Image (cartoon, rainbow, N blue to C red):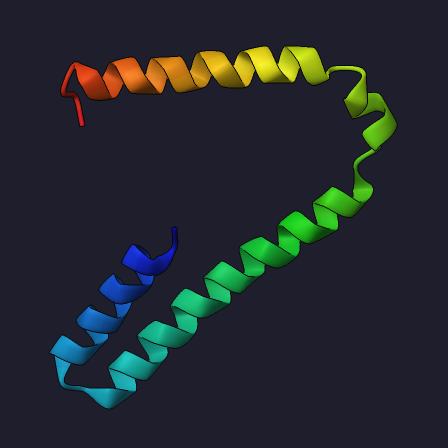
Length: 79
C-alpha cells in the first residue's frame, strides 16, 4: 500500500534532474517512514494487551462503523 507514495517520490526525484535534491528527498521520505514504523513498534510494546482484549467487541463494532461510513462517503462521490 505504500508503493504509490514511493513511486511518486521516485518520479518526483527523477523529474528534478538534480541528484542531490533527489537524494535528500528520498532520504527524508524513508527517514519519516522508518520513524513511524519504529514509533509504532515502541508503542505496541507498551500496550497492555490483557486490557485491550476485554474491549475487542467494541473495537470491532467501531471499526465496522468507520468502514461503512467510508464506503458511503466513497459511494456519494466525495472522493
